[in-house]
Image: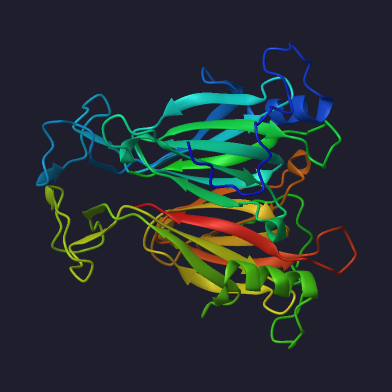
Amino acid sequence: MSVVDPNLSSPMQPSFKPGASIKEPPPVQALINKLGLQKHPEGGYFAETDRDPLRVPNPFLASNGSNRNTTRAAPEDDSTRSASTTIYYLLSPGQPQGVFHRNKGRTMHTLHRGRGRYVIIHDHEKHGEEKARIETFVVGHDIRKGDQLQWMVEGGKYKASFLLPDHGDDIASEGLLISEVHAS
Amino acid sequence: MSVVDPNLSSPMQPSFKPGASIKEPPPVQALINKLGLQKHPEGGYFAETDRDPLRVPNPFLASNGSNRNTTRAAPEDDSTRSASTTIYYLLSPGQPQGVFHRNKGRTMHTLHRGRGRYVIIHDHEKHGEEKARIETFVVGHDIRKGDQLQWMVEGGKYKASFLLPDHGDDIASEGLLISEVHAS
C-alpha cells in the first residue's frame, strides 16, 4: 500500500474512539438540533438539504447507454435521477468516524468547520491481484499546512473519514461539518 | 419592495466601500495566492476547481425540448454542458462586493469562512408592472443567530453579495470564502 500524505506518521491511530458512547458536547448537540441532523448508517450525522427537481439520465442504469433520453419522469422511475442533491454531514466526538463505503456518483465535499482525515481507496484503478492505491489527506482551515477546504471524490472509490481535534494535541472537537453535493 | 430579513436595519449601508483601492490584508493576500484566485468581472475573486467530464443536455438551449439526447460531445458543442462545475469565490476588503448578476442555472453556495450579506431579486416571480420580491440574508458561522452556511440560488434570479466584518462592529475581515457548485 502506498500512502500519499508525506506528513502521516505510521501507523494511523484514530484521535477519537468510535463506539465510546460519549455524550455530545453542548455546542455539537446544539448544531445537530439546529440543522435537524440524524444519525447516518455509515457513522456521523446528516440531513438532506436540497434536491434538484431537474432530472437527468441515470448514468448507473445498465440499460442507459451513451445515447440516453432525458425526461422529467416520476421520481420512482430509476431511468433518471435528480441533477443534484446536497447534504450536511457531521462527525462529532460521539460519532467520530464515517466507515468505508462507496458512492456511485462523484461527490464534491466542502468544509464548513472542524478538522478531519479522509482515506480514499482507489479500488477502480487496480489490475488483478495488485494492491489498490490508498490516498489520505487532512481537511481543515489551515490551508498553509496543506489542509483541504474542498475535495472531490470520484464515484466507485471507497471512502472513510475520521474526526481530528480542532487544535493540535488537545483532544477536543466541536465537530467536523461539511456539505456534500452529489451531482452526477 | 418587501424585505424578508426582519433583523435588517433600513436602509442598508455597505460595511466596506467598493473601489476604495484598499491593499488586501496579508492573510487575505496569502489566501488569494494559495488558492490561485483571480479577479472576477462581477467583483471579488474566483478560481474554477472542478469540471465534471460527464456532459448532460444543456437545459438553456432553445432547441433542447423535454426529450433530449445525452451525448459525450465535444465541449464546444453547446447542446450539452458539464454535469457540474465548482469554483471558489472570495470577497475581500479590497474587493468587497459582488455586483448584481444572473446565473442561468441553479447554484449551491457553501460557506468556508467569513461573513457577508446576500441580496436576491426574484425577478422571475413578478407579473407585469409589479415590483419584484427582494430577499436578503446573512451568511456566516453563527447559525444560532440565523446565519446561513449553505444557500441555494435558483437560476434566473439577480444576486449580489457584500462583505461583512468578521466580528460585530470592528470593521475588519479576513475575507468571505465560499464554494459554488453549478449543477444544472
